[in-house]
Structure formats: structure tokens, C-alpha cells
Image 1 (spheres, rainbow, N blue to C red):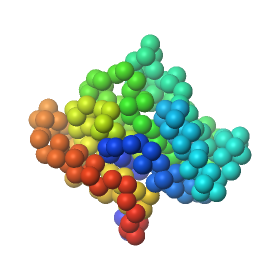
Image 2 (image 1 turned 120 degrees about the vertical axis):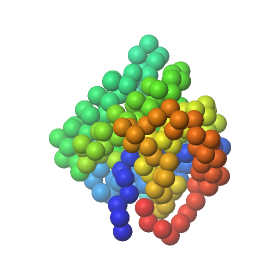
Image 3 (image 1 turned 180 degrees about the vertical axis):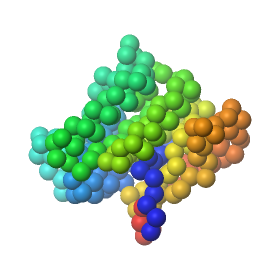
Length: 217
């Protein structure tokens, strides 16, 4: 089976806690593959992830102590409360190298974009970040991860950007889909971002919700 792109997007609506079972299951899988796993979100969601991982049999305290598992609600990547693309990319690059230096196969990371962006709502800065991330994924095969886009907390234009910037859509730990709306940075035009079909696609992915499927991702 063809390997899906490692830079994925989770598009959803409703309670963020509904996504935790799938994300926790994937985290367990990645821990088993000797990846350092990084989960970035608000403090309540971090607490929820701890609970789901513990329920799945993970010794969370032990994995955190040996740094196989990093659960963080720290927003040190923000500068004056604003999202800084360069600082975030540099932080991820350093985290990849540190994981490799520490003997891990690589870094698997997932973060909630509402949390990551803070009060920043500049869609062009977000698109710059996603394209810089895409370049990072291409040059670092040891990196994989999921950007979480919550339709209830992000404006629709940012949801569109999320759809344009990812080759693959994460639906659950057993199902991922190739994204027909992905646009290469060099092929991007303003018209692509204004395509009304993007809104329909965002709504369609939101309606899918967390599911279980026998199809492997």
C-alpha cells in the first residue's frame, strides 16, 4: 500500500475531547515504533490525553520522565502573544535533532492550531507556516505529525488554508485520506484560497467525525 504523506491535517467540529481516543491510539503506536511523541494543546486537553493514554496501558509518568512522551500546554513559541513562524519552525527543527541525538527513530508531533496561533489570526502567516512545515517534512523523513484544525474556534478562511496546505487528511488512527484540494506552494494563487468548494470540503470532513475503519493509514 502506498505510504501517505507524513504531514497531515485533522479537520473537525464539536468537542475537542472527541478526537482524543484516535490521537491517543496513534500516540501509543508511535511510542511503540520508538518515536518521541509531542502533544501540544491547552492544559485541559493535555490532561485528557494523559487519561486516554493511561487507559490504553501507557505508563505516562515513566514515558514523560524518559522524554519519550512530551505533553505540553506551554506557549513559549509566542512572541508578545503573537505567533512567530520562524521561532516555531526553529523549535521543531531542534526537537527533531534532539530526538535523533537521544536515540529515537524520529519525532511525531500533533498540535491544535487554535492553541498554537494564540491571538494571531493572519491567514497568510498561517499559510507561510504550513508551507515552511511542508518543507521541513520533505527534508526530515524522521518527522511526522498532524495539525489539528477546529472549525468551532478558527475562522473559515483559516480552515481553508489548513485544507490547502496538507496532502493528507487524518480521520482516525485507522483511516487517512489523500486530499484533492492540496496546492503546492509554487502553484498557489489567490483564487485557490477563495474557491467556495473549500468550504464544502471543510464541512464534509467535519461531518465525518472520529470513526473506526478497517482501512489502514
